Every structure is written in C-alpha cells, then in structure tokens.
Amino acid sequence: MVKKNFLLSLSLSLFLWSSTLMYAQEVEKSSSIWTTIGQDYSNFYADGDRWIRLGVAFGSMSVVANTSTDQNIRNWYQNNIRSQKTDNFAVYAKLFGEGKYMIPISLLASSINLIDDDSSIGFWGARVARTYLVGSPALLVAQRLTSALRPSSPTNDPSQNSHWKHLNVAKAVNGVSGHAFMGSVPFMVIAKMYSNNPYAKYGAYLASTLAAWSRVNDDKHYTSQIILGWYMAYESVDAVFNTDKKKNKWTFSPMVGKGFYGISLNSRW
Image 1 (cartoon, rainbow, N blue to C red):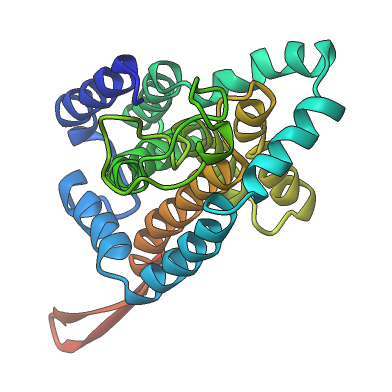
Image 2: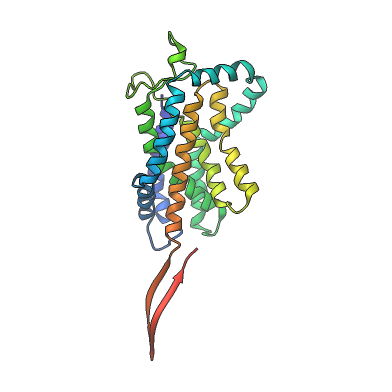
C-alpha cells in the first residue's frame, strides 16, 4: 500500500515547487518553470514510442508476475542469498527510495540555482525533482492497475501474491515498486549528466538499482515489481532530459542597425 508519508511528501513537493522553484533558473531562462514542466509531461505522456516501450516492459513483466517465476526467484534469493550482511546493507540502500527524504533533498539542491545557475548540484536537484513530478502520476496509476501483493503478505496461497488483481485496490497496490522508482531517479540523473564519462555513467546506473534490490532483500517486493519501478524511473528521467535537448536548438532573430540589417543565428547547449 502507498505509504501516507510518500503522498504527503509528494503534496509538499508540489507546494514547494510552486512557491520556490517558480523563480529557479532553468536551461531556457526566458521560459517559466511551468512551461518546462508542461514540456516534461508532453515528452512523457504524449510520446507514442515511450508508451510502446512501457507496454513491452509491462507485458514482459506480466508474464513474470502472473506465473511462478516471481515466487521462484523470491524463494531462491531468500533461501540462498539473504543474510545478516545483506540486511544491514539494505537498511541504508532503502533510504534512497524514501520519498520523505529524497523529495526535500532534491528541492533543496535545486534551490541552489537561485544563487548559482551553473551549479551541478542545482542542475541535479532540479532534474530529480522534475522527474518525480512527471513520473509519480503514472507510477500511482500503474500500482493500482496491477494491484499485486507483497511476497511477505499473509495469504492462504503465497504463490499467488505476485499475480495482478487488476484494480483490486482493496487488497494492495504493490505491482510496481515505489521505492525502486524513487531510489533510482537520483542516480539516473547523474548518469545522464555525465553520459560522456563511462565510469560515472555506468557506476550511477549500477547505484540506481540499490533501493530496488533492498526491497527484494527485505521481502517487500517481487523482482517484476522492482524492475517496473526502475524502468518507469528510466523513462521519466529520459522525458525530462528530452525537454532540455529540445531547448538546445538553433534560433533565428532579425538584426537591424544603422546602415545594416540581417539575421542573427544562435544556438544554446
């Protein structure tokens, strides 16, 4: 079930965004933050190719979730891999997926743009916060559409817990991991920021799986559930960075002066 503190954090983020980040300097200084967010939403929700990719992801994971595959992976991990050491590490890895921490941290980091618009920390914070804002509605809908249970949920037949109940929200909304989504976004943004550095890029992508892994270790989510949460984060981050790319286009403007006229050609990157 979606935790109350996650929803409260999301609501707080919307309020803080409107009151503080309205004045933050974005890639295109002439456009408002709401124009930028609107483009983020368009890049995510109006992109047919993105929905095809998401459809493939959900289709393939539905096979994993609605067969014995999820339960078999869960049994293998819990019986052969989980230990006191993995539990100790999972305590810290899980923190990256806690919305009550990560949303305020991203907003605080993005506020650095108010005093330094060239700050890498500010750039990171703004993109993380924007990703949470654009991806969270789809995440919440997907959780309700699948309506799966946790592997540790007490039922008569635990092997059925991963199966999608389809809108049976009275039971659970765990078919897509919120922790996997929240915890992977900060590292995926870093991977995008340093895409030309293979060590930073792939190291960040590896780190993006930590919160997701912690949920499998703690027997809170099945494999299909964390993969879907992670992938929804990937597409959400991609939508945000596509907004920035679209702002890096050539622009033309007329030039008129004393005794001359022409066209000014500008590019921003």
